[in-house]
Image 1 (cartoon, rainbow, N blue to C red):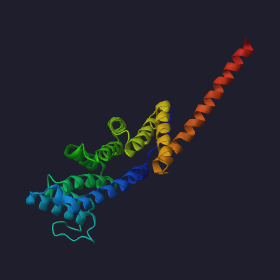
Image 2 (cartoon, rainbow, N blue to C red):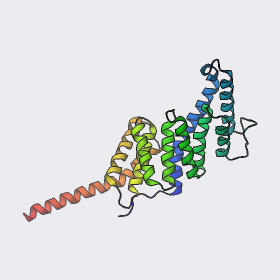
Image 3 (cartoon, rainbow, N blue to C red):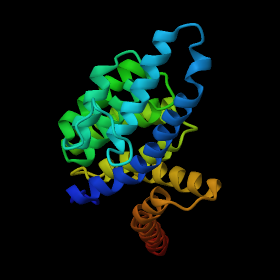
Image 4 (cartoon, one colour):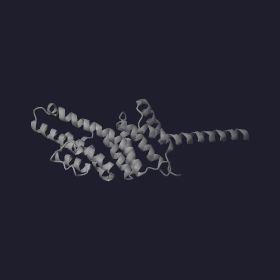
Length: 245
C-alpha cells in the first residue's frame, strides 16, 4: 500500500514555523518581563540581579542586533550562533535558558535539524518544567521527524499529547503524529483519523482558525471519503448476500 501522506522539506518548515512564531513572541515577552521585574524577584542578591538583567539585555541584542547594541554579541554571526553565545555566557539565568530554546528553534529554521534536536533536548534538561516545556518537547519531536527518526518522533509526539493535553502543542502533535502514521508503507488510517478528528474539534472549540486546524481538515478529507466508500461497499456486499439467500 502506498503512503497517504508525503512530507517534503518545505512542508517540514511550514509545519514548524507556525508553531515557532507563536513561541518566539512568548519568549521575547518573558524577557521583557524579566527586565522589568528582575529586581523584585532577586531582591537582596545584587549580583544575581545584575547577571540576570545583563543576560536579558544580551538576549535582546542577539534577537534584535539592529535595535539593541551589546558588546558581547557579534551581530554579524547567524542568529543561532548569537543565541548560543548568550546561553554559554550566562549559565543558570532564565535568559540563558530562553536563549537555548530560541537557539534550537533558529537551528531548525536554518535546516540544521540534528543540531536542533540536541538543543531542544538541552533545553528540556535545563527547564523541563518551565512554561516552554511543551513547546520544546514538540520541537524535539519535530526535529526527530525532520531527520527521519520516525519511531523516536512518534514517541516524542505522544509525550506532548500525554503530558501537555491542554496546551496548543498537543493539538499540533496530534496532526504531526497523524502525518507520520499516514506516511507509513501500510498507513495506520484509523488511528490517524482519530488523532485528526480530535485536533479538528480542538481547533473548532478554540474558535481561533489557524494553520493546524486547517491542516487537520485537509488530512481528514480523503480519510472521510475512504470511510464512506468502504461503508457503501460493505452495504452493497451485504445486500448481494441477502439476494443470494
